Length: 187
Image 1 (cartoon, rainbow, N blue to C red):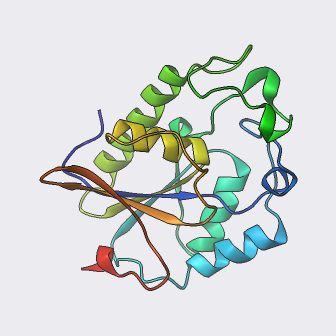
Image 2: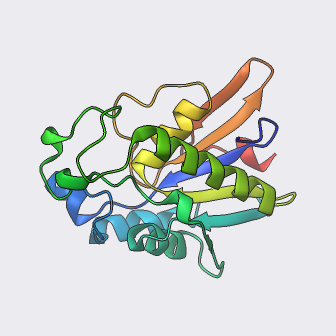
């Protein structure tokens, strides 16, 4: 599904009111906090490659982050990058979240999410041409990408506004969390 020859970058949106308050916000339209907006603006100062293709989830928190992080660039919206629908758990405290593999009542099954995220990443890779695909999305999308590239969807939640470079190697996929000083992707 994902092109195993093409690297891509995934960035989780900036901090939202739901993140701050410890609430489950899959399909809920959580809003960026001022801290989330500031962190998104700070992404603009990172050493990005000259040729990037910007893709974004249709949800407001991801779109707002992309516009602040990449001023002057118009992102392409990909529906497959939206966050998982947690059904009856939407808006509830994060400690009530069911296991990732469980299908919440009224929510999206994990295998279905894996399929749509894999399709969205592949679409971004295909549409980017020679440019590096940069996708602004959600925690669940990064977890899905990890599983789709041979890693684990479990563990701590990906940090807000932190770029994750997924690149193919001879041994398989490598995920690198890039800091403000990293320029590995600009070479």
